Length: 508
Image (cartoon, rainbow, N blue to C red; front, side, top):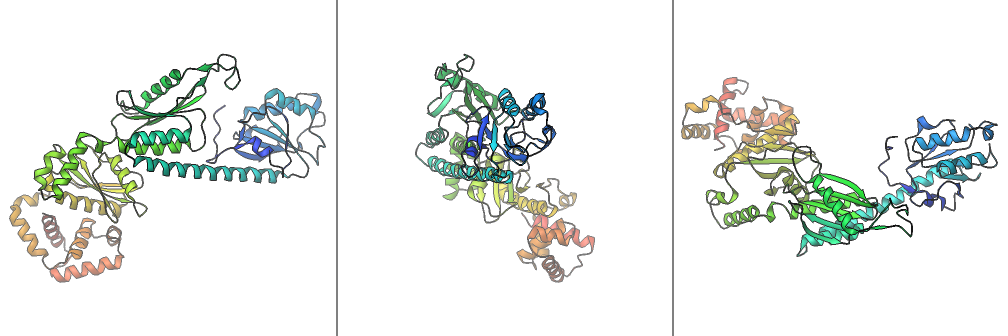
């Protein structure tokens, strides 16, 4: 039987539902395990409800389907076994109007197959039971969200303390009630916090929860967690970024940190509560930032380059501190505005660079040319051609135009074309720039940018309006103004070609 698909809501403990005095439910058969949970309530009077169950249900029935001679045959055994096979969590049997008591054969079948059986009194409607289930789910969801929010706040505060890595690990271990450890690229423990839970040997026959259970040494649990961390440590394409397992009743989880340097976060907890994965994921993001490039030697060199630029050094003078080779300028615009610093930093981490600039409506990232940017969910990206530090201003303009083109064409990523038209080889750069300056002199910067965008989009009014975030009538008015100031017919292909040539050289 495959694992049932459950809704994105916390399950409800069956014991909590039975404890509701307004319902008057009473468990009369099956195990009274405190860990029994239900994911929803479903009513059915089918003799074989198997095809209609998803798993995890509290199935409610008034016994309409029960034949009169059911108690003397195998009817109830077949009925209960099919519910169990479908993954049903519990059965609720309503008294009246069909049955005054719960059939004895049904009680025995539920005991045989280990299915909790609840007696639903006549005063309690099935819709009332279902409503109570959803009320308990809403309460659990609210408690889970509150717990996750408080954990996020405490983890963020821990990341700002003098020893942030250990502070984050301590806070995570406290929140999950277990042990949190940071493994280095070679698998060694870099830092840890909390206490390694002791496992229970479930193969000893004593049972994991019994008073005479054999306790598994902590070294066994820590060894299993280290092995799980090795599973997610980057080793090539297809390596998972997270994994979970269990060792002697202890829940284990491992998360590869996003810095790409081989660090792994491991978590061992005696139990798994709703929200634990979200809390651990937040800790993994913070640890990714704390162990990323800004903590390495290259990060220190880039900080030094920034300081020197602020003190008046030329880009060419500080370029060696940033490493050899060309760079890409990426302009990114979030699909949902506005963008906050944390989101911008997360984008930089995804693109493989800590060099991020958050402006009012765009994020700029400086990325080594060897790290080819890819489309990112929730973002529209424009990427420049590779450029050395002296040409970064031109690359910045290329990325801005590429972003406009990406937004106009509704593509998640657009790259600036590196191929130059052959026409540029006919004139020297100085002559081409002088010609461009003279031709475009009548145009103010807003008109120049509108003309450049309009020409790059083949004269499309709608796409130009989208790229510039203005109304299409505004585009028409600006283009008409350009034609008047330049004294040319913009419907003429020759005029368009000459203007595009000039606009390309006006970037220099």
